[in-house]
Image (cartoon, rainbow, N blue to C red):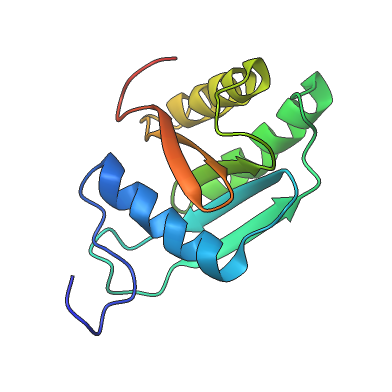
Length: 134
């Protein structure tokens, strides 16, 4: 990454985690938030980022249906990268695993699977990798 480039080129899970750390350092939330970003993999174009605060602790069927509908619509243009962030401790909870399964399933329905990421504060961790299941 050169000095004029704010975000890293997305080459692997580590660089994707670093991208999200930069976002969270600038825009982080103390709530349960679903982050959606459209990223230029080379890191040249500024990303488009949206955060949806107030996500439930545990995904409910109606939440999943609504999220799937929104992401199905958006993926017609370009599949976004997703991050789920929450307050609390760093340990992976059963609810983290539920959210990871939901996000993995939605991504898989769009023809590819990117890492499922979870953040606490600015610490980002992969719950699954490129093309892996949960």
